Image (cartoon, rainbow, N blue to C red):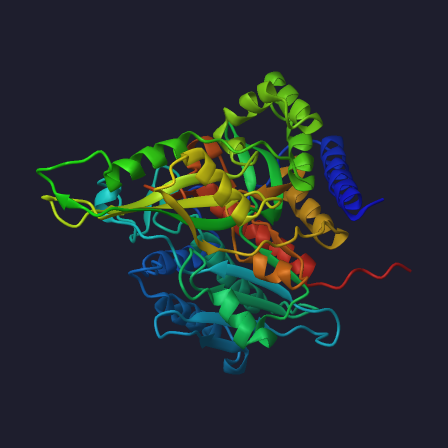
Length: 488
């Protein structure tokens, strides 16, 4: 067997085993709910307080201050009893600090630590862009949801990690292996990525055996859990600049060779361009497992696409659902525009940023060449602006599969657990490049048809899902940080 065949076999086998195990048990929900509306447990109240504090600190990647959030979380961890010597706050710039805290285990010479990773920075948000009743930096509760920038991405997990550490210390529970909590800066494409900085300058602080990060989560349908995912792979983020220059002139004497017009034509072609469908080991396992949960037409199309990625009819059916469309291929979309220098002058420069999420099997240069060919205008330069290196997928092993399966069954009943590729990107890539397994696992469930609001207007988190995710991650943390039981 080749390495690719072995990888494909492992992903398929893991997905099949998990789905088979899930369908063999009752899908009945636990009789004791984790969350009761209007009645928070003491641990849940702590989580809400931490969550609210984080939300209301503007840590936008451009205009906010990430250090304020790091210092606030360090203060809470210190007050919970973690010694100063085990808490680090620092970064490359005064407003871009990270916080790393270590909870010492009983057997520090044993297995490497569990690292719980979340980012503190958020995408910019303007109040005038949101619905009138919401302020992106005010924690607002309405109709069963928490609204705010970062409520989903990624202050939910950051606050849960801190709150769960406080709960663990209050209960007096001590792990077998160390637990590291790292809350970092500039994950949202900021110039000073916190994980990258820590890897380069303080590798010892985050040297772990396994990483739990954002990227995975559960899917709801009609308010009920449908399946849970473990993110093991991600697309590659690359930004391209479309650049058109011109000699310009007076606007009263227009010409056909207008820089803005040429750029507009190019962007229209980029918007209509579809890259070819691809199926990787991870997405093959995902679509194979998910096909059993979808209506017959969608399920049949998924199975057909796995068998033959060139099946255009099957691809059209799958791509009609936004949840799955971007998992099929490389995607590119215009995100920023600039051009011209005066209202009464022909533009001398027009530029656009095109953000691409590249399938792991393609390179940035291949995508650049495909964009240039689709545009078909040599006056429009297609330039690679920024690119992230690819990272290998994380291997699915019993170390992650067993505890995720256990806690999922306890909290959500007999639903499948499915490996997935994130269509976005996160900081797991730094650890995967070092050979450290990093997984997107959260236990946070959402309905993608109504809750896909990260980076957008009126971002929100379902209140029930937040506290279920808190309990999921608490139980998962304890299982991961405990030594396996000895078999007599």
